[in-house]
Image 1 (cartoon, rainbow, N blue to C red):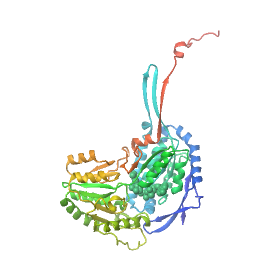
Image 2: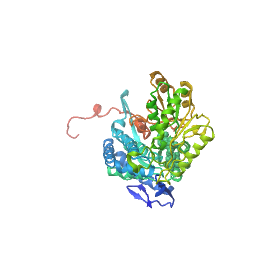
Image 3: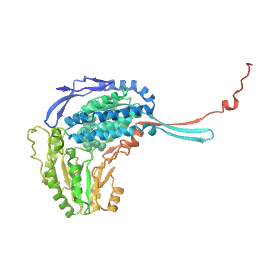
Image 4: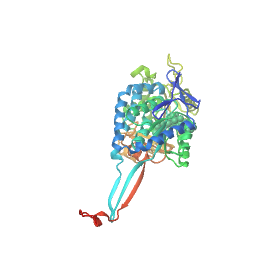
Length: 499
Ligand code: NAD
């Protein structure tokens, strides 16, 4: 049994708390490693290292800090296959999907190479008589990030790359379910030239999170995960005077208008609903066809596509569409919610409940499910299922469909499929959701834009990555300067003998 470590001050460090979490291979159901769960004093040790290292790193000029990111990009590309394999082994997602997880993180690292430009600041010459005014962006000091299991490469990189390139030290508390890739990323950053103590990985659970939230030195906390924990971390972190941004859960609706290309819409729903076993915060979990005829035709097109889905372990290579879910508890929760859907009267059109994979009977595989005639009062509509379960809510009109997306408490992403520019434009303008796709099912913004939802999908104001990240990880300092008249008026310029 492999015992994983923390990564502190440039070295792998064994856990000393005596507490561990099991890390599974979700495909086989076997425990493959033990993840140490840090206590307060281990977290404090990391903070001490970070405090010692950060001032010198902040004094390195931005161009040189950016060069570390350049080198890090090279190393990520060099080790892409290795990282993807380690990620799939603990998470369960397919290898191409795991490489995508690394890639979407890498793209934010690339954006961070522009740090010298992004950190330049503002200058007003002669803001008053003889007065100049300038603003600069300075690092916060020690920042921390708490990340979810579902993107163990991408989300840590979305946090630590901008934090570090801005001159902060960063303590990452990754998900205890798949901590190996975050540890590998920390090693690669140091191989890229990052001084020790600037990136550290402290593994743990609530105890380590609470230690972060209460540590007086930690200036900012980034969180991505489920909504109840996001709300808790935002409240506690803010009450302790920290700068906090928290990104929570989702229930993403896709509206299918009667004029949509239904083959395109069905293909999009398959990828967005079942890809990564539905364990994506930008997954589509609710299909909203407008009109019964659209709904009937859509279901007709979805069923054969769903029945063709290949579910299996990542080791089967490109033959697999999606893998197992992350733990037995996640599988049990999905099955419980599916049962509530049946009990509350939804029509289970594709029933994945009896799914078994030969040779992997102990793995956490969940067959694909499709519900029709779902209504807003049902648990499968209200709650995030985070599994391969797509719910269809039939709407009579566009306004009713729009209202569903608007009235749901989550507001991460949404999409509309239509050939009508006017409907698409109206939808994008009015819907109270953060990321909108027009004939695009998973509208994840690229690195140079920003990522974030609305409503209960977010707590805080600034988004992830893009220019917002540079605001989140720096403080603005504004200097107003006036110099009294000096040497140019009263000074002696001629060489004279000593008087
Ligand atoms: P989670 O909330 O269970 O865990 C996230 C992190 O919080 C982990 O590091 C975990 O150790 C820690 N944590 C768990 N329970 C805690 C507690 N009681 N107190 C303090 N810390 C605690 O989420 P998850 O299951 O790892 O990830 C899936 C969730 O993340 C889904 O809800 C998904 O929608 C969401 N998510 C959101 C985004 C986004 O950008 N909005 C992106 C990815 C995932």
